[in-house]
Length: 339
Image 1 (tube, rainbow, N blue to C red):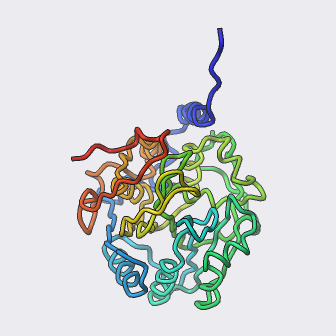
Image 2: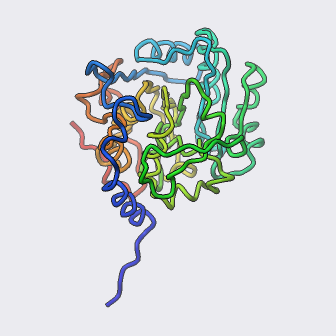
């Protein structure tokens, strides 16, 4: 009798499920590296949904200010702030990377708030020539114009840390770039996109780029072998992300994260809990976050919450601006029903 071979996605799911079964319930207790389901006192998680129809400087400046004050932003005064955009590659035809105009608007806002230092840092996964990508993405120009330090995380100094999950599979001890380890405030700045291996990619998935390619390979092979959902949760449980801003002004649909098509959603999604931000962004994309494997896993291990009753969204209900993104056919089941 013939035996069907496992796909990479199915294998990753089996690995992740077995590792989750052994995940200690206390790993994400209050005071640990992970974020609690709700803030202290039982208050709702706060997410800002801000209409942002274009990348004009004045439009972005107003949207960033509105979202910042409508959520629970970190205190950045006198601190080193590290911005982690999404830049797996750069293309003039496709919106692959976080738009530099949004990054510049945020840099100016953080400067107004008194940030001591702002660092723009990314560890690209598909194209190893980071200098070329930084230049073509417009990040190098921002760094020069605004006095921002630009760091290639793939070749940064390294610091070993223990995973928040002591029974982690291939990530039991992570090797982090010093820039990430020493960030006083870390902000994830993903592009709103579909993903051929994960369904969608937002703030939590964006943290793949925080691990160095010279240790984990290209395109971060070890993280894929470990299982994408499990790797996302172990990384986000170990690395504290203080804030997230999803660039949904123009995202990507279809065969993302590199070969998809432009899709305008005209929004920014902002907040201090990456899972709540991602769940809200998913709903805007027409995706049920409970059907996204890594978001459901993150909810189970208390990295936050994806339930709408746990999330206060300022700026209106996500379904008010819902813009269905075309999904890779393998992930058609993620589509949320209307109504």
